[in-house]
Length: 235
Image (cartoon, rainbow, N blue to C red):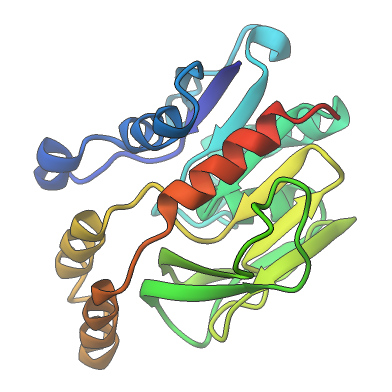
């Protein structure tokens, strides 16, 4: 199975030295669950895309500090690419910014939340368990870092999970698109470092509450198994 990782951001240099770039995080996470998975990275901020859509079997859009409603050329280009992937019913996974970009590209709406920043470990509760789910605990504890939210899901999307902070936390479109607001690729150490780098953007009570949640367990490997199962399932 070949996965194309659509890199939509660059990690802060001072953090990249210790944690790598976002594709590095995803490759480490996913190949631990699916050792035969081959990953190819496309830097979509620089306009890098496959020559043909079938160059890989599935795609994953990373997170980004950008907002999907910005009218920058690379976001408009990625929007068009998502629409074509959807048209051809190729497997596609979106994480955080990717979750939001897919929703907007397919008729949904994304806005900056009046709730402000969501950081730290949040619990997302599934209302139904799809076939790629492990059919275990319906609660998912996952690291988040966002202030934009999907306020109207993509056309035809089924919202599978939500939290007190985020109504549209996990969504699926047909059998070919899966999107998650949370960050399974983050480690707690990276989440802590990122919060500290962004502490001037966060209210102190939000920062301290977010840091306190890191005593819990991040279920990133569980989500990685779901993603691997989803992209390998036949449509």
